[in-house]
Amino acid sequence: MKPFAYDRPSTVEEALALVEGGGTFLAGGTNLVDHLRLGIRQADRLVDITRLPLDAISERADGGLVIGSGVRNSDLSAHPLVRTRFPFVTQALVAGASGQLRNMATTGGNLLQRTRCVYFQDLTTPCNKREPGSGCSAVDGFGRYNAILGTSEACVATHPSDLCVPLAALDAEVVVVGPTGERRIPFGDLHRLPGDRPDLDTTLEPDELVLAVEVPPLDFAVRSRYRKVRERASYAFALVSVAAALDARDGVVHDVRLALGGVSHRPHRARVAEEALRGQPASPEQFRTAIEAELDAASPGEGNAFKVPLVRNTVVDVLTGLAGSSEGSAA
Image (cartoon, rainbow, N blue to C red; front, side, top):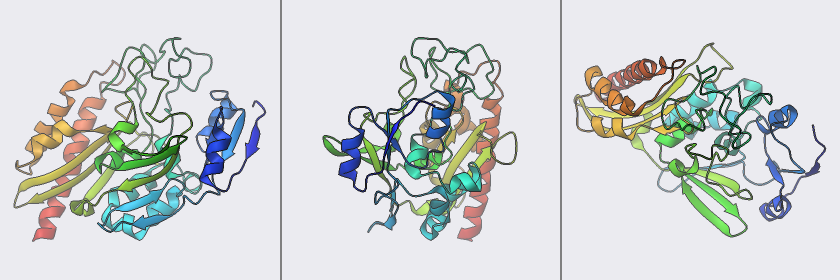
């Protein structure tokens, strides 16, 4: 590992001043430290932000939540308001990594988590995300984990975060601050599709710091579910994941939120399927029709064509279960 300077500021202003000119923010380090050790990432200066006052969860007047970027995954998953109002957030967090890693990993770190594509992590292979212009080994290589939506010739990698999938479904906002001041980014605008610059994961500026994630109220999110399909029961990244919240009454879908993980360079909000479901019967047949419309845009390769039926079947199963629980609670 290349030697680096280390600073531990106690204010946001200090942190921004230290990172200016090429410094790198360090929070839990569960992703960044791996990459420093592997040689994927280099840093001249690490700015440890764990002392900053960014580790609180507070309730908004409208019933939404403000989640500090420094909140640990284990604390967020166990918070009573998260567990009761947004259970699929808790489920997504518990499905990720191990208990030890959840005790270290932070909300902001999850948002900025980099892909786990095997070629991105292998310095002996070309990777446009790691070295722009070098090529994409995954296109013709091992493709089981590759994206099926929003891909480009330059990159077929997927976003690895579990937490980001329900946050995408919830229309969260990300509050960031940089040298020019504070700004708010709709969650759907935070992560980028690869295009011809897959090395750029997000729309953040290099010297911007994530302060918080704001989750607006969503009453029917009390009936929500996160389903993660993976190759082993724990400590594995998703082949496919589904975050869904459903408002179904009298056999009709009044509203729905649906997001997918493991299928795109960013958490994928399934807006086509949502629109196809509102006002329609809350039936497995309608759920299937809606997600098939969403998947019309899919472009899988030979190694990951199985993801298309896997997404379809998982979405139908999750929504069918939520529809049953909605009708049961209404009764």
